[in-house]
Length: 347
Image (tube, rainbow, N blue to C red; front, side):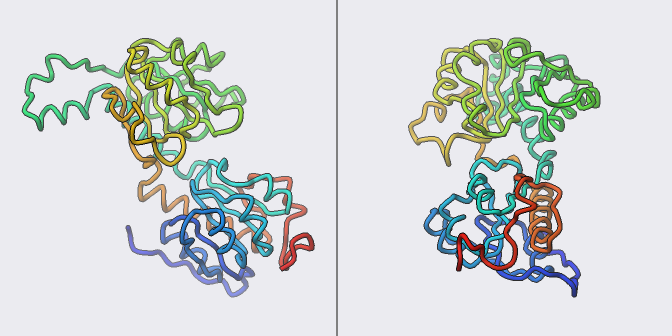
């Protein structure tokens, strides 16, 4: 980690109190909190009961993929803001927070470049069989190259399912490699596609049938959960790769394991899985066509600094009465909880 930056302390800063840090964030974010007059406390574990107990006297919470459950929201009468270090808010009880007047903020785009680079890295690893080649070299198999099926990426089509900040960043990198970019983002304006020379897919089935690589960049919602199942995998090309750096539950992992074993698709690169981890006996562990990484795509130093500073800055904004730039539940702003505990949940 780099040395901790310092922020000038504003004599007129209004915030005070304790911010619960559910999971570690970069020191740059903690420095931003301290500069505004906030103390911080590190959660001892992620159990809902623990978070409820340790957030009870806090004015703010910053969390990552560990989330913040309804039980903890209701146990914190002084809580005035929940900050999400990252984009996805699915592990946070946003509806409960909104009901009791607590703004939720996040940091879309802070990790976009790093996650996009990781997605491209997984594509390279699959196309060039890098893990298998490394293993072969260490085991003395110098004839590996004669039987390996290696793929040149230039001229192939990358299909982006989701075209937000991370999807667009991935598309820019792929275009620089000479790949054709096809993207499915029904709500995105034409200018986003034109900016990187991407073609707009007419539908998800259209994209799946045409792409040589399918890369997922969607939030997890009831509509997107299991968006890639056995039917979708069957629609993909036999030589296609599936990349998931978004949310594990977007993919039916059992169906994926079967598709890889049957040769329905050629490979998969997953930085995320459903839950905290795959069961130790999950068939994907033994699948040589799958490359698995432990949710590290956003964990570069640069991305961690950006996310920590942005989420801390927005926490300070809310506590100081300033509307933050990335307000997830915008409808709560004019009736947000302020200062003393609310009448509904007195201290």
